Length: 197
Image (cartoon, rainbow, N blue to C red):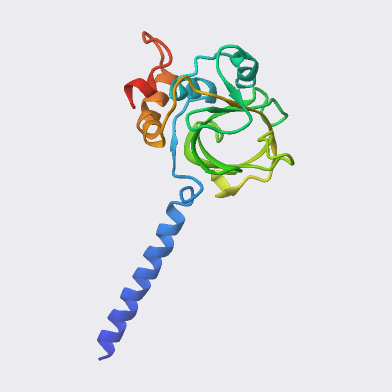
């Protein structure tokens, strides 16, 4: 009888330890971040260009003005569109992220390269915290802390894609976009959504 109790207790401890280690081993995924992966050398602008099909070049913060007359621009999100962050002390070149889902009028998810250095984050939560509900001030999910970031970032708005996208299409094209953004030799730009999606 005592042997059965000892074995049962050991099994219970193993189950609890396994559950706790599973929680600790994947703290950077969940409802506010679908996946994160390492991609040394990957930066936001080449990746966003490849994934969105928006052929703009230069620092991320220049995309808003660069889109004038070439692409639609909006103050509300569209799947496949690019959220353009302004330059700041934290974002010296600005930042761009591709909208992957619209959750509510004030919450979206994005696929973002290099928000965390050398990482690709999929379905990363972004929340509109602007007073006028116009997406000019946002907070972004920060994977290392597994919570919404404490800083507010200024944005210009959204550059609209040349053609509509679906979440599934963007997910299929994410890996090819990362590869093409790092090594674009010998291929016309951008192409990931057309090859991967």
